[in-house]
Length: 101
Image (cartoon, rainbow, N blue to C red; front, side):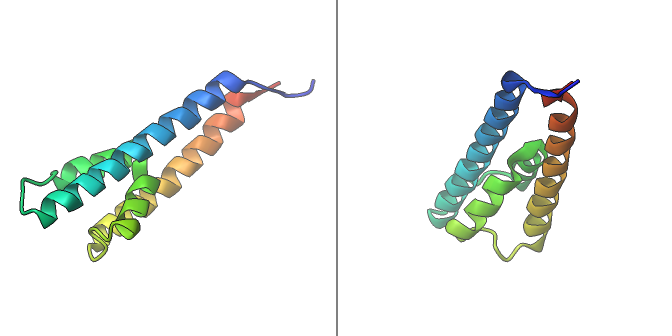
């Protein structure tokens, strides 16, 4: 029996990751702006939490496009690790639920 592609779960997963990555990118950009203006910052645990939810790519992009927290090795490791972890999770989810046959 050939496997069939189910588009709805695929687009839900893609949409989720696009949104969480845009949110973390925006949070990092906002935090950079607040740091420059010496205003109240976004807590680091909030940024880490968003990375755990799947926003690692957005965090990494913000780090290097906004030049924010690039000297903090813990952010580099956390964002890279969560990115790899979520890529694996996406692969496993898509392998079992999107291609059904």
